[in-house]
Amino acid sequence: MYFEDIEVGLTIELEPAVIDKDEMIEFSKRYNNIPLHTDEQYARTTPIGRLLAPGLLSFAVVWQKYIEKDIFADELIAGRSTKIEWLRPVFAGDTLCGVARISDKAERNAKNGCVTLVIDAYNGDGVQVLTSTTQAIIKRKQ
Image (cartoon, rainbow, N blue to C red; front, side, top):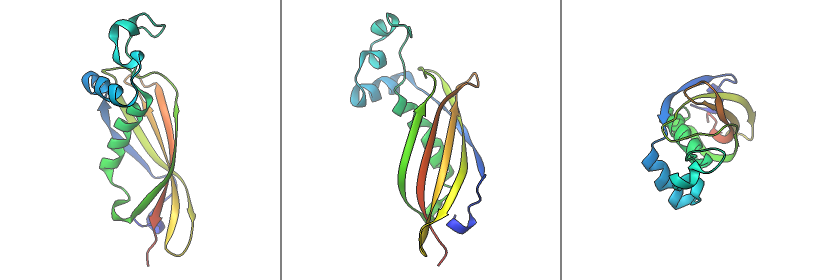
């Protein structure tokens, strides 16, 4: 989708994503190796009381569902930035649902523009667990 075709307010429902326990532990051991993410016995002794999914994994599984929608397709030039806010804990076995929304767009030059995309993710109880804001550079029609 070219920059000119993108409408602010466009909303896309994302498919559900499950936090698989084994994948969560594997991811944690590789990228965020702390006991709260990898050691069930330790996690039970904490105020949370169970294994906690790493925030980056929670974001990544929802982001993958957004990527599958491929709304910008070949017109995507590059990502510019992403800001993630984690609002509530996510656990192994949680199913996350997301909504992606175009919140802003701005012309950059004759060849491309910048689009702001907000993704809000919710757990199976409908509680919002994270929000992210990403800016992407999108081709203009030539």
